[in-house]
Image (cartoon, rainbow, N blue to C red; front, side, top):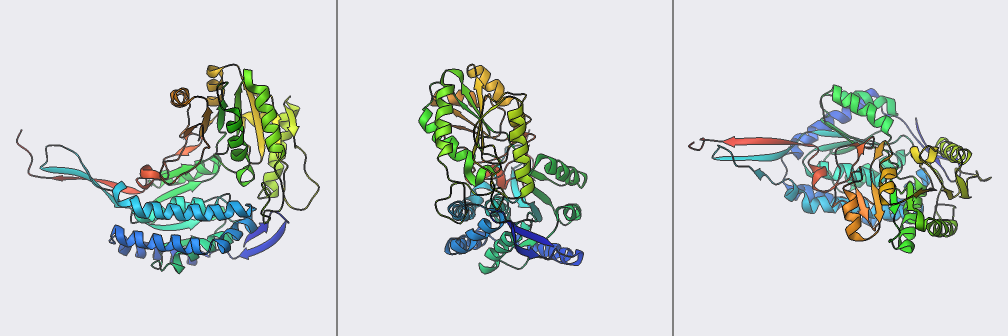
Length: 457
């Protein structure tokens, strides 16, 4: 049984039966059958369906958003924004997939030689709880527009979101089997990955989980895209607009109660402006309201599960015991639900817990750097490599970007995912790319075609 618990109250709100082996078999078979027809459809037909899905989502945002709020605590205003962003992703690929997948003519000894991009078959998405709609569409929209079909194994704690996502497609008139939810506990997904009818795997989650999925997929000789954890650095140099930087980094740190892989985790500040940045971050983080995610004036909702909150608190307390200063928060509240206070840790050093572990919650971490070179050294001193931001002059920031070992760098702006731009990590943060033109190419057969006769030598 999959059980959803409202993290704002600790009360069970939904229970959904897990799929039996026979039900999983039926869904995989339906996915393969749907693929045989879907792969032959035109881009126009595929796009028309995705636009209908997007319209349904926009028309029903006030119904869809609350499911996220109820099951994983996302504040209502953020939940509505996530539904809208997911619809945008569907529309983006409806508009651009044909261009992204256009054949590439390559000169050779052939009369004509080119690469064409063909669909693979059913693709499995294994998704986490923290952005239930966005991460589903980040996986599904490009896969479907490429001519594949989708099987979605969502996180066991958000079964209502999984049901709602599948309904978006059925209500839009999707062919049977095109997009299906699998209701499984995580250990039960391995046979699905290994099933020869499943032709690729997209996984978003922890580095430990990604390593396991990659090992299974690799042993079955099928492609896997992995979007994993991050300990994302944000560098603030002395010539930055400090007020703008701290505004953006405050927002970045507390979106989804800080439960985001690309949130600003380690704020690395040049020594000459460190004290000013510290004061600004304390002021801005301290002004945020933690509370009921249903309330329109709530800035920070609860942590999704009690075990996640306990782990976050352990990281905070361990970092303090190692010598960091706690300027805000840091104590478990005496209230119902899994809330954690907005916390600010200062003078964090590389040997401390909050520097070298991913903190998944509303915890700001300030790190002092001597200069630009030291800031870059600190930024790269991590096993992760998902995203980073740099706050300085545009020219200087652009030059620094190539020295930062991450899959994404934002100069003087918030780190975010955007359907127009590729997203993904290096090192322990993942393999492959999602979104943009790169993402849709992950689950296609880049088939080389050589047409003779050969050209005269």
